Length: 427
Image (spheres, one colour):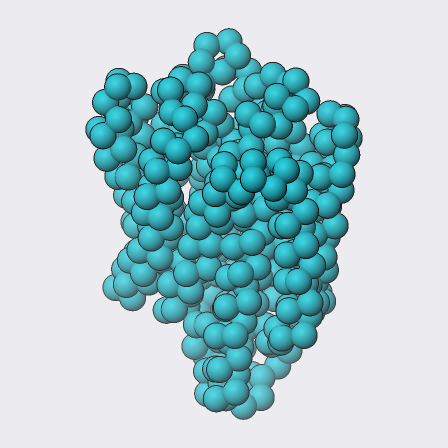
């Protein structure tokens, strides 16, 4: 990789970090706005769950389409288009005045939510396998920080500037700015450029999407374990994102300031967990192909244990609750960067967007209904039961699925490296 390309790749990382940060702020702050929006439209927990499931369903349907487009065409330009769509749909969501209109426009915001596979695969062509976990971890810092920024906008800024609609106008406008930055400053890279087998090649063959290679994705046993754990693993994230603030306010008696001062440190710790997970995964991967999977399995198991004890802490024991939530936050995201890196450890460059999109499709096919299921359980029993039941069951299931992947990862990783070596010889 030339000096210019090396310099440019860090520009790309910075732009993509802010793309994800502001996009996640826009996407996730709705959880902090639940009480405001619910009171505005006069809706129940079940209807609130339907609002959030709508966007998830749209994103789920579009994942295969985005994945295919990213593997066929220039990813940078498509990501610029995604940012443009983000800005436009957020503005529409702020404009409407009826619950039906809000439900429809909120669902439309899911169009750009399924655009991340192209971002990650483009980064994978700038950075080799031994660095990807760390870089993905850095990028994923944007998710919890965006969550925190969204919480600040929702709880502090929104009441000062005219309500929740005003902050939607702000985040929608920022989407348009990001679209321009990506269009002019993010350059495309040849697919597979950062694979170690092509490291010292001035010229390399161009790898194009093929249906034959796309079909090979589903023949890899490791991918099926990743698909299944993803299906279960996204449930807790959606439940926490869309219901945890209402749980703190309604069932634990927290006011706005208490929520902010409790959750802000927890979210910052959660943010560090993404990078810690990616760094630990890279370090473990250098020792064994199983490394990323081992780190992931430890993360989900300990996350489930600490979440169980946190939610069963008495409401008056706020310090104990805070400590247990901090411990939960350390382990929750350990698997995130490692799962993405593992997908790229076993799939060829020209179908990686498709592979990741397939993974997200399967994840969201079930998780899209998590808010509805949570809302129904919360209305029937309470929010604590809904959150605890879904989170603990899902994470324990993920642990056992990761154990299965430990027995398949060696073969699938070896097969990819052998295939890359053969291509390098023929280039």
